[in-house]
Length: 401
Image (tube, rainbow, N blue to C red; front, side):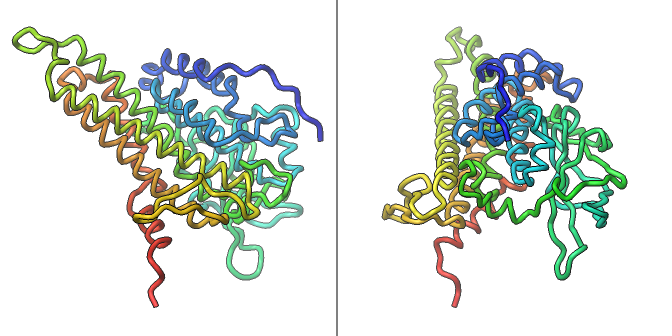
């Protein structure tokens, strides 16, 4: 295998600027502008988790935080597609080498969409692979993808069916335009269909590979991280951007206004308290997400027994260091922190919306768009507080005897 020569990547600020320029149009059309899609690739998101031997970056989770949140401050739909563009490259890195070669043999800048939860469709054994048919929902970014990862249950073996992920060329996938949501309108999270598509064995892997992470000792840290440690984190990063965008929009609305006595509205204690609290909640959420990203990077960096999953962690009134990797514990901590972060961000945007006045309600304004977008993000199953609380509690309370 040879490393593919890579062009010089543009800074993350480029993506934010392009996203801001086309945000209103994306909202109206329900599609990202081609220039935005190009900017996602030009800033290295498609290759972010691609293995280095294909010319990819094999980057860290922490490196994504500011890039995705920055784009999300301008357009949450851009941030959503951007983070999934990176995430789906990481999923595809679990393919056998020959399958990876089909995706990245010519370039690491290949756009991958996915619909792998829940599994759907019908998978039938064929010589050297499978025949795949069916329909899958919520394939974000599929309109500008080169490949699509789809999951289906494989009943060809003995015992329980296997949960299998398969890579299909985009031209073999049909799109049903089913995405017409109140938030994240431009993500193109449509349904996709295939009808008897042949998928060779080297373009598939079992879901267990995602749960355990790549076992190869030479694999980059980002590929050794189990899926459950990072799924919620990646979905939460656009929410951080949406909250930052809401705060910017609210400040722009409130700043020029005046009280009945002619004084600036910014002299009003309620306005000052709203600004202070919402900015602090957004910053607190950022710290929680950065901690979760650092914990994930630590888990991938050392799966042999010395990683501390982000250093010291609070347990009641004591502080202890995790001396051995404990994926269940680390995943529960990440679920807890990510769910709380999204709750803080959603609450902050709610408060901004309530105090933004009638101007903040105008359709097409940054505040109301961020309000709709963050509620769409917070509705995702991976970000719900109840399962996060249950997972964390299970690591704290002893099992019932």
